[in-house]
Length: 240
Image (cartoon, rainbow, N blue to C red; front, side, top):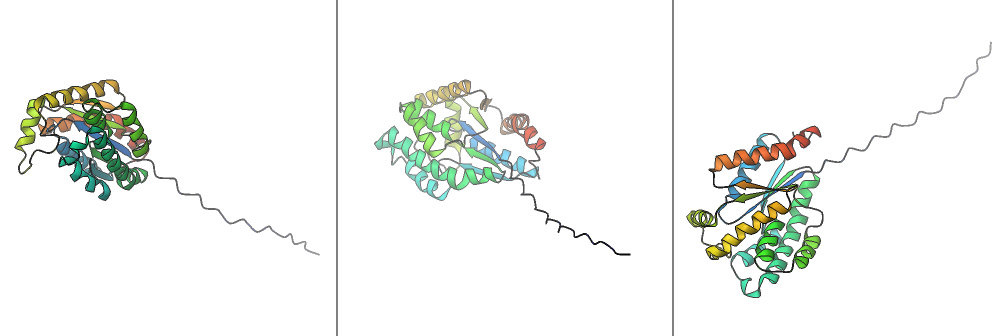
């Protein structure tokens, strides 16, 4: 009895599925006047997130990357002040472009939380609202330096100008920088400008009373981050 042999088609090799791209991280900025406690709250929030297993990058402006740190000295020493607020805004934008390209964007692309001490809102307030730089120029500089890389959450620490200056002057070993050395009237206007900014963009900006002790402010900040960002991050597996 003859047997009929059927040829089998070779099974196609399984094509491995491409790895899912890392979910974009989350970007948090802290803003406010001098002495409001931004650096302290950046550090405390970063430590809290790391304790939960998140990848965290803590950074600052001006600075946060080699190129931006080089510009930081020029800005905060007051060397650029005689050149006027337009030049200062351009220098901040140049530093910011390097910061975003070298530090912030790569961290967000790998899924990290980026926490920044000051960002675009400081330029909007210091050089824009107080320096009277044309807002169209401010926005144009943002488009070039930042593009779509805007904070998901901006926490504006609110403090009376007099108290902020007192705290700033009490910092051990820290002399007054270019902006701390301005008079109290400047700092009162600064506070008003930050409050107005927070009112204009409530979907991104939250005003937090910074007159409380550091623990109380940190608790408020944590509740905001947990409510606005962590619940979503947990849903998409952002921890670990």
